[in-house]
Image (cartoon, rainbow, N blue to C red; front, side, top):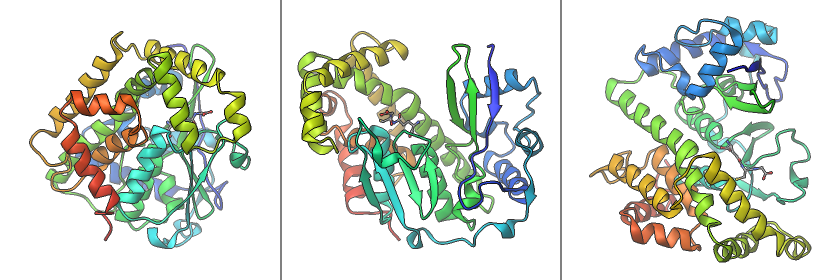
Length: 361
Ligand SMILES: N[C@@H](CCC(=O)N[C@@H](CS)C(=O)NCC(=O)O)C(=O)O
């Protein structure tokens, strides 16, 4: 693939120009301990690895070395002590910038609610996005942890979970999820985050936990790369479903009356075509309902006889699947999914766990 690659590490305030060599070394040893020395390439997508391998022309024997990344960004090593001391998750002020019905935002809310983490939300206006004027990144969800900005739902979840299980500060943790910008053959910039599905443990974990982590990563990735893409072609499958979704979403979102009525006819039409575009782009079967049911049953088969994929309690994959669906509850798509698949009892169990903050300690 003729791709040009630029690796850009995004450092968040207050360390915007700093980089910790020690932090990165311990990061590598942590990867080894969580992957049992198997070259799982940080859990990043094959496409990303292919781009890296081609673009850099480098042999990637297991993982991208700190040296390679730091050479690209000409990083200036700093001591770990340059990072602020760790604050516990409950001592951090968390603000989630979101659209109420965005599936990726639903994922983050499911995570925060399940663990009983306090947070504020800012509902972003989908047309003007004036609430994101401070940020170069213009997608939601975007999360502020005190003054530190975190982009991308899966990075947000992995970083916050790492904070809960480790001893590093959030600023230190974010070094482990570098932002990587690639330019594809079509000339468009794409942003990836290395390790986005990895939880960074401070201590080695046992073999059983390692297997559970691997399964969790696999299905979190499936939510982002497969399952979520079967949803919008269903939500906007027909003109009347597109209208229903538009009505339902605008009722819950930060759309002014003016915005609502100025887009009243255009909105559903645009979304109808967006649904078709997503269907084509992700090569989804013409019977989009069936395609969604099939994916849902794949998930249920993976859960098997367990109460949750996580066993007696939901893991991050359970929360992710629940999260992307939770914003659709008022729609025909959701009702059909619950009626025509075996998902409902599992869905209700996760919903109960999330609503009662069952993961709070
Ligand atoms: N990979 C990102 C995807 C986020 C995403 O695509 N969000 C959509 C809303 S659902 C968005 O902000 N799109 C840009 C827009 O609305 O202009 C994540 O997981 O957070």
